[in-house]
Image 1 (tube, rainbow, N blue to C red):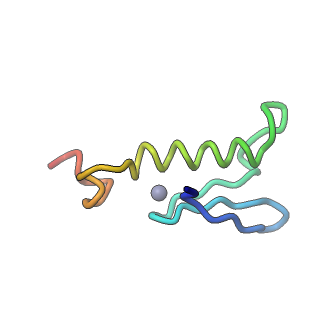
Image 2 (image 1 turned 30 degrees about the vertical axis):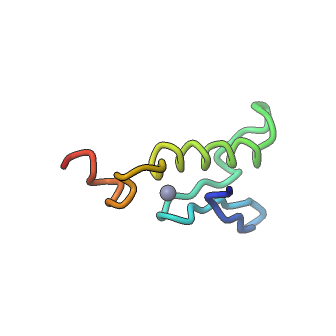
Image 3 (image 1 turned 90 degrees about the vertical axis):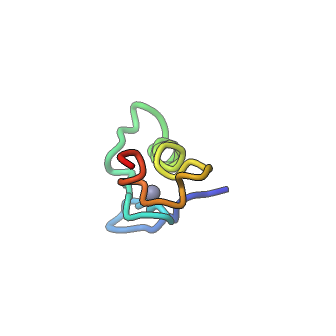
Length: 68
Ligand SMILES: [Zn+2]
């Protein structure tokens, strides 16, 4: 399942999280490390896993549940 939307802004693909305001653009990655879109997609998947991981705490604001 995809956790992000992809929009083209000023020639760069912007990957935006569906669940919060987090976003990355292909501009942030360097092609010498591999395909920028692949890296951005991986970053979004890691973000989703870290921030919106499945389980009971996901019902809470991801910023706050750790401190409860
Ligand atoms: Zn998010």
